[in-house]
Image (tube, rainbow, N blue to C red; front, side, top):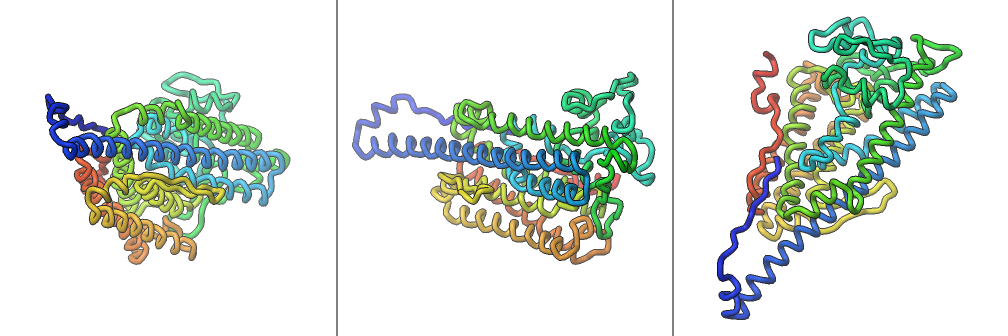
Amino acid sequence: MRTTRVRARIAGRLAALVATAALTTAAFVLPTKAETDAKAVIKTYADIALAKYEDSLTTAQALDKAVDALIATPSADTLAAARDAWKAARIPYQQTEAYRFGNPVVDDWEGRVNAWPLDEGLIDYVDAGYGTESDENSLYTANVIANKTIKIDGKDVDATNLTPEFLSGTLQEAGGIEANVATGYHAIEFLLWGQDLNGTGPGAGDRPHTDYDTANCTHGNCDRRAQYLKSASTLLVADLEEMVGNWKDGGAARKALEDGEPNAGITAILTGMGSLSYGELAGERMKLGLLLHDPEEEHDCFSDNTHMSHLEDAVGIRDAYHNRYTRIDGSTVSGPSVSDMVKAADAALDKELSDKLDLTVSKMEAIKARADSGEAYDQQIGEGNTEGNDTVQAAIGGLIDQTKSIERAVSVLKLDAIAFEGSDSLDAPDKVFQ
């Protein structure tokens, strides 16, 4: 929730100001400087958003080309290259997530590219252990790749052509069910890796490249699977092109910030930081899975790439505070920041929050180090893995702790209180088991 603070104006202010030069300086120069600084912070924040979404688009375009190569010449090598391109595309995108909660233009769009978890039986074949039906989702095992007609809300729907328009306009959240995720990174992830059937044991999804080889097809419908994958990849590029436009000069997201009251823009930055830190990342993406010891609750569950997604989220939160970003080409974008504003008001608090943001990133790096050594995130949250559980909990603790300092930053900047996103897993864990 974004709120703004409207400063009270004192009647007769100009008459009082002319009394002394000192008072004139204090009343005119300092408030003007503070307002200018806030606008400069907002401009840099928007510039970095543009750079991050441009990098996300560039890497999605590379993924799209890798998908073309896989479809044209299915092999173990082209499948591996497409998987690598998907992982590379996740890095800049995950760093954009701190822009979500404070910017409605982003939050309203985000479900098209990063919605999760998904009921993958909607899209393609699944293992028998997945089950055959769900009380909550009639499309739980619709398998649109295998079926040219599916039933949505009791009506037969023609699924002959798995076009981008069909995926986004008909299949995405079909029946009003959020778990019917038909587009975005995770739909593509499923089509590249397949289900991870290893539970909390080692190993990710292991879809064979022959699932795309029409001459030696495994699991049937290789031509339709390829069409679906290509449509999903095409949509991802198009959606990111749209978001790049939203952050260019005159774009909807940039304009909403730059044309608004400066304090509202600073509030948006802190809202994104705090909500991603607490309810979304610490709660829904991490604590919930840890409480349940459930690999199905990990963010990148097909590819076992969750450790990277969580790390890049933490980096993105830190970037938003310091208004700095290192692009995929090695260049940097930086400028006036919320950190500068907090430091001017309370240098000790700025150091406290900066240190906590660094500490959280280091705790996420500890999760990554375990993953790099062969213990994937779903193994780390497994029941009985005390060291792994503790490593994940340490990162959750860091996120919660930094959120407390973000709340203090809101106060020291004299902004209205922000209601950050919450999570039952943090606020009412008993409900998780009901």
